[in-house]
Image 1 (cartoon, helix red, strand yellow):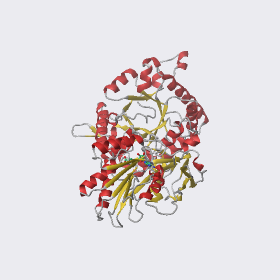
Image 2 (cartoon, rainbow, N blue to C red):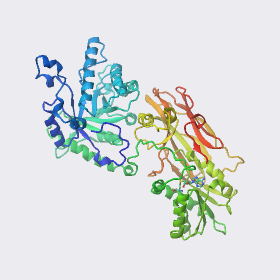
Image 3 (tube, rainbow, N blue to C red):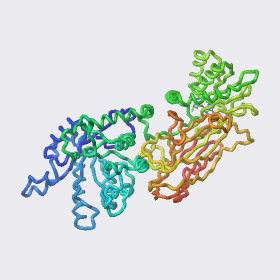
Image 4 (tube, protein in one colour):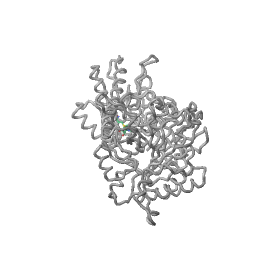
Length: 630
Ligand SMILES: C[S@@+](CC[C@H](N)C(=O)[O-])C[C@H]1O[C@@H](n2cnc3c(N)ncnc32)[C@H](O)[C@@H]1O
């Protein structure tokens, strides 16, 4: 059983990760129960720590000291790896009855102590009603005092009243969970176990989206929820498969609870494994991005740091990106009518993929071009020199310089660049291209790209919030960590509204003094479900070439989820966090202000929430994060 956050298991293979646990009701012989479960293909066992049947053999004065079964029945490593300890379901620390409250608290505290004594990786508790504040206080106290194990919180995935129409009132079980984890300060040791609903009450796609933004650790399935195929083997109905497919991205585990007569429990774990492989292979992007999920990366500082070989290699694996660039250059040069060779300058050439794209177009059109490659990174320049000699027949003029200070020998007809970060302008493409445009023909010169726009969307991701809180860099305070944007392949998150356009940059920008400062206040549509706002995800769209207003006249790249370029993997979103999560009710309006600021040495963003509450402005004067211009 994996109890802790494991974002760092970057090389793990999801195909092997359909980890299944078997729920075993108070087995008399725990050792045998484990052996049987393992033989059936399960990885862990869920069972009670204490149970009346486990202590009934004792009487006399010693009986008062019996808590549960003896720890010597298993080795420490077995307790630690194989047992998820279910706490008593008969306790109710939130009871109205003071006596029940008191005795429940005593039992709960004893069980928590016993679970720690046994060295279990995790315990399982249930939320069965809306009010769990006493339970939250006790668990939170343990967490704050340094509880070593994870707390799995089991809850029905859909409203109780939908499962039981005779229920007294409408409850959203997400609210129970949200209250509970909020009282526990979003502690990352709290993980969710979601009970699969009855088939007629499957959650809506939007309800699922919100659960996907939660730290879901396991799905709880009853054997009665399986159908039998023509060979008598268990299979899940399509609607359950669809739910499982959504949660596979979170690497969830599965707990099987036997509520039927079927003794072949091995066929259930086998089926779940089969399903894992089947659903995994439906996701053709999985291999490319696996291991990066929800992992915080610092955005690149392209002007002050030289990119490394591995980074260039990752860019170059993204065929889609270069096919689109090649297409843009091809569509532009197709119309070349001048009686001279077009001058094409690739600025920020890296190891040369865009130079290659230009040379390929030249060959396709049988149009000789004069090609320059401008690059400031001496190590990338070394690669360009080799490629020019051995692959490009020395046709390319290489210039090792900062494009902003280059005195070009002639004007370019086309400037080709890819200086875009996850937020479009956040790797200083505007500043670099404004500096380079002095060697672009002012009348007819074209920049590829000609425009880019950043987009933002409000998100809920307590996972990212906790990653920032718990893994901050030693040289940063907590405040600085929240004020730093991170590049993240978002996985465990819920987007609360569609992305809205933020800052637009056009190239070339032949004004006297290009101004790349920006300010915009964005009001998102009212949110449809209660949620927790933890920050904003940033994306971009870029127009590589714009040939007019007709449909299909633009060559685009996009990371905006609404218009994402299919199969393009070069950019993950950027995340701007808030310093504290903000609770939102259905219908609340999120309004945010964003600034792009600059001075002579750096560029930075500031942001703050205006609605439904106001927050202090983050990253004032780029105090925690900025992009250096030199
Ligand atoms: C995002 S990489 C793209 C590289 C390459 N075009 C590709 O697609 O693989 C940007 C490149 O631009 C270079 N660069 C950034 N700013 C520059 C500047 N002001 N002058 C010259 N090169 C620059 C960086 O060193 C880096 O190699």
